[in-house]
Length: 270
Image (cartoon, rainbow, N blue to C red):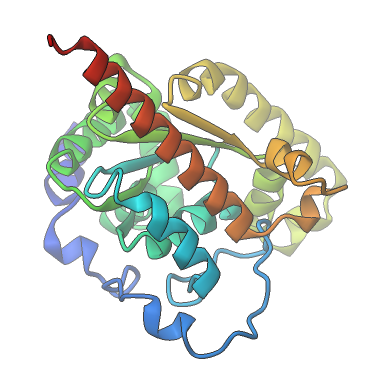
């Protein structure tokens, strides 16, 4: 419990959120305007990219600018299985709509001393872990222009699910194979080359996914990597770009906000 309270106290303190691992976000417009020839960023890169590497194209900025006025200053919470694809999509989304980006798992790793320390904390003190998520979400509900990439604690109890209602929650549903590959890479070359490692990791991750998918599904918006690829006529998710995913997310948020506005208008007395 002491560990949980220590982490909660420092969770979103200025010293943590502005640490060297999480530099202050810069406006992406200048980089986007350097030239029209830009590489197409795949939605499923092998590594997690930095905010600086994820500069939106001018075309993407135009597309998002048309919609962003409808939900300006509404916090956006990204949930789903943790992997490089989820984080990269969330970062590009933040840069595209000129929001700040934070990742709750990264911040907790900074406070607790790394990925292994966070994993131990989560497995040995689930109550404390959920309390930390609750504390962080409470602080963030007052922040407007923010994309928060959430850990699973954000959906694991009704209190935290309720706090997500202060913004727009988005479930980015990715193929579990991506998360497993990311997990094995973080464990080193031996894990990648061991044929049993993939099946063991997949079994563990599949069980966690099955336990949480109904909670993920409580999100306001669900955007599936496989569905977006199919809608765009791609034969494989390997053809999908990060910008494809961001355009679909913004389209779904815009659709949600307009639907809510129509319902509110219909409920008002004449």
